[in-house]
Image (cartoon, rainbow, N blue to C red; front, side, top):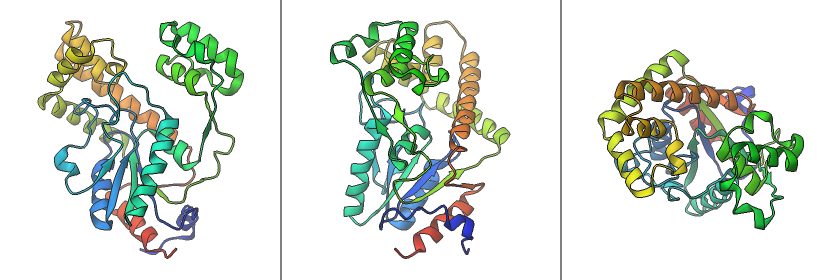
Length: 305
């Protein structure tokens, strides 16, 4: 495959060493593709996922199993205990350091994930600001969502869109770290190729439904029971898609069929939101198949620095 001029323009040459980013919505097959690339090109995988960073949240987040990880170093998985905070600013810092370490070993860093904010924070070099007073930070968890929203509006005026002022966890993160300053979002700061899986949405919905069934058959409910026993039902991460439905099921509020239906529905809605976020990035090379994605990545890696 010979790269078109249009594709070559998407390869940002900001660093003499190569970097591969594999993005896409949930259940689109990103992990399998990243592992295949890592095996072919002596790579190491860096997870860009706001859910798989938490220990114990394995089945319901589709975290790559130890068998899948075998032979391929993985980074930024299981780095926080449930209940601990982790932000896009944290990911940016951690990922930059891991990339440097991988390059020092002479290996290829491969970013893979569906958390678009994490990926953009790294690639576009977001800066984060915080105007929060240290004597107020510890009280954020005690405020109502309406109070948090008012505080965000007070401090950051038009810097935070209305769509972000109803999500409690997002509001707390903004108050602790400040919103990203995205005025320079149009220019990548880190060189690399960004490919994204572009599935047909009806087929993706079917895949999500199949995956939910597999999770339920592979011990997902038991996983949630263990997490509740250890961290309590009020653990913030138990509000993650799937986990919150399992908590409702274990509390007797919904049936197993309702759990399955709601998990599938909400995961599909998440996939649609992820696609909306990713479409804003003009540097992405959209790939309808793994074969095409591998061709694009191979040709990118063949370009001499």
